[in-house]
Each structure stands twice: as structure tokens, then as C-alpha cells.
Length: 375
View 1 (cartoon, rainbow, N blue to C red):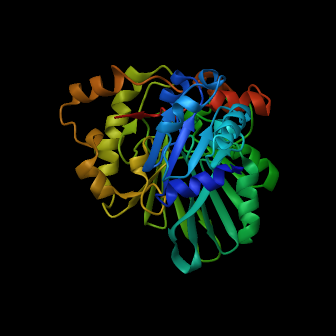
View 2 (view 1 turned 60 degrees about the vertical axis):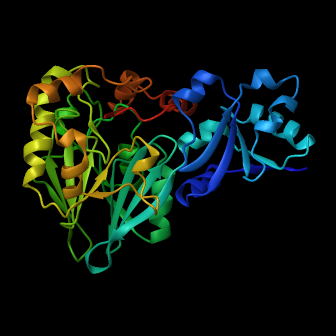
């Protein structure tokens, strides 16, 4: 039988189109349990590579006979070898090009909806990391919010759409992934915005992202308006686009809320987090569509692959928005938090511009799941 190679893009379509897939993950068990390729209808078998060096005969009965089979490892090499062994045993199998490293890096652009006067809003879904970035376009101009470090994805997409990137925003100083925002601005001549309360230690020039700031796209003046919403960080800022979409950064997610501890100031910021969630957001129209900067679990994806939900629905359904007792809320977001993101302190320093790691070092910093949320 033959072995085929699949790109991360092909696997992403399996996730988004809700397809069935059997994944044989040959990484060590702790790595698999910490982080894996997730799909609504995926079945998994985790057998470490070293346990298969003497042959794959014992696991053959455990492998699906009626689903496509994908072998996955950290970087590719081990999965190729195991896939070839399975092929020699008579199975039709594929392996993931670049392994989990490539899965962590892949971005899938999906249209969220139309804006006034011919504008469009796109969400860039990083399935392997849970990151969500945005591009609003109109009248030949574009604004980008919370870009990850793969700058070519955004500049190439803008080129395909025939638009010029004019504005680049980060809703806050990120701690779980490396921002591509200021690098896109440097490449394109766009203005780069960062909340000044998060920028006290940065070593590069930026334009302050302040409460009430409004920029327009194209002649039809689509509004991108900033709203100060601290809690995840002291500078966290949300955006209302076209009076229709609420980009919440890492403050509010579909199934959870943001954590306030990634700068070591949970006790200081928990009050800000509650005020944003329970007061600032409560003044907004419930028909706004919430678009967060991350997702945590595969169930947060809609049928079209987007991560989005009506604000009013979140007020009713999101547990983090329904904790009446302030002391209980404070305990929830400061005690027994999930593990912090890999290398989060180093990532913050990178995003301050103080160090510039190699591409390989940046990849290693970002490996692993999203851990920005409190559930």
C-alpha cells in the first residue's frame, strides 16, 4: 500500500467540515495528553514511537478499518516510519507533514460576515493553538487585530484581496503567543496600536490604543472603535466593528473568561476583570457578535469553523458571566487556575521587543495548547 502526506491545511478542513478521522499519535503519552489535534469526529490511539520499533502487528486490530488513518508525531520523522510500517502491513495511511510543529503554525482564514458598503470581516483560525486573529477590509483598506507571528499569511491575504493594510492592533500585550502586529506594520507602513498601560516596558515605537479611539476603513467609513476593558491585562482593549461585532481579546471567550494572572497580578486585576464582564459589557447591545482572540475547546467552533456567538447568548450561557457572589468569582479566577502557557514570561519579553529569538526558538516557545482561559 502507499503512504500519502497530508498538509496541516488538509487536516484543518477535516476539522472544519466535521469529517471522521482516525489519528495514531506516536508522541510520548504526556505530550499527547497535554495537546493533540482535536476534531468533532476524530478517534485517537496514542502509542509512543519507541513502543513500535519492533513492529506494528499488535496495534493493527486497534486501528480503524472504515476511517481514514493519519499518523502524527512531533516533527514528522517518526510518523513517516510508522506510516510505512503500517503500509507494509496492508493499511492505507497518511502522515502529517511537519508533525505537530506544522499543526501549531497553521492559520485558516474564514469569512465571518459582511460589513457596510461592501466591507468584509475575516477570522484567522489557528486550530493547533487556539489563536484567533482578524482582518476587516473595506474600500481598498484593511485593519488587522491580534495578528500572530506568521506575518506573510496576513500580508499575502491582503494582497489577494487587493487591499492595503492601514491599521494593526493588539488588544493587549500577549503572553501565550508571539505577536506579529508590529512586524506587519513595519513591512506595510501601517500604524501599530498597543494599549499604553500594557506598553510600559516595550522598546519600540507604537501608537497608543486608548479608550474611544476610532479609525475608519475606506471611503464608506466603517468604524473600528476601541473600548477599554481591563482584566486579562491592565491595558486590555475590546473593539466594536461596524456596530455589529465585538472583538473581546482575551477578556471573554465563548465557553470561558480570561485569566488575570499572566503578569503575576491576579489579585490586583481580578476586580478589573469583573467590572469589565459584569458592568462594561452589560452596557453593550446584546445582538453584538462576540469574536474572541482565543478558543479553548473544539466545541467552541461553529459549523462553518468560525468561533463566534451573540453577546446576549453568552450572558445567558457562559458560566463566567453568571457568578453573582463577588467572593466566589474572585476565588474562581485566582485559585486553582489551569497551568500557565508554555514560556509565557519569555513570550511577554519577546512581545515587548526586548529579545528576538530565532524562528525555531519561537516555535518551541509556542508549542502546546491555549491556556488563556478560566472555565
